[in-house]
Length: 387
Image 1 (cartoon, one colour):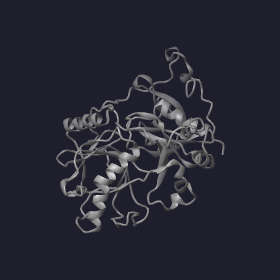
Image 2 (cartoon, rainbow, N blue to C red):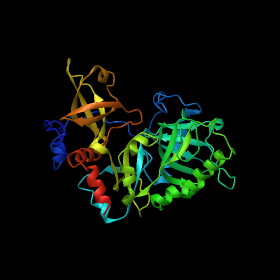
Image 3 (cartoon, helix red, strand yellow):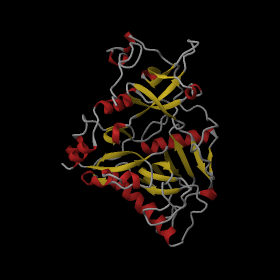
Image 4 (cartoon, helix red, strand yellow):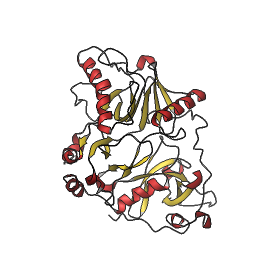
């Protein structure tokens, strides 16, 4: 199936990006999105399609804003945007970087991304990508006790929520398969220690020693119970890139206990950076690049069979990028953020995004499209990593 980039109309897609001065030509603009967090959307769900007992949306605006600023301070990132490390798509243009310096790799489970924050008093909070904050009730708190018996506090973990495909656990501890699992992919702080200067292997090892190993030991030896916990914990395993064959072999994704979105490659020797990081790559089989847009149905046309897809452009404005065939399902999503994939010279709707409040920006979107134009096959990736 051909998946090359469409040739957009002059009012769309690639022309506005090629102008030396965008003031010389202005594409169709949407109203400026409210990127600064100004109000709490009371209908915001923690996990779409499942009610989770013991987790509630925090509705005190001042407290929410205080936590946003605090988490941004921990990561040394912006307080008006979800303050985490963002990878770029791996393409044939970038793949040689994997041979210039040591890299490590881990599977990225599919699910909404959160920051899990435990404050100095043991209070537990979760920030999603729209910067809404959820509180974990005290009687549903996740048990995190160090080997010395002290509770783990002052911690910020970066991960995704998902459900296990199977009811067994590779760590040898059987947990409740109906519960969500917070799969830790990275960490900013742990037990009061700033981890940003450590490399990814050191950060993961620190979290394992402080949280995961004591927790598994307590559950295995009946020192604690997870029955009332709102969710369970797990952590990804990073391998040296030249050992990635075990992750990329046929059948791994089928037997891995979580649905896999992609694989993440981190530089072995660099610390945590809160921004788009052009040294961190994500790779997915078959180049299934999903892009986030804001869907808008034109009001100037009485009867239309097309809707408009907007991206996040310069000066915090949203710019029309392309169009999509309008369906009955999409008619209900006017103004919403949706994921689409580019197939056979057109955009196809995938799903509504409840965990985003703005669409992909130009840089992220063009990066994903370049990954379609310059795909990295599994064979090429493996042969590169062997070097």
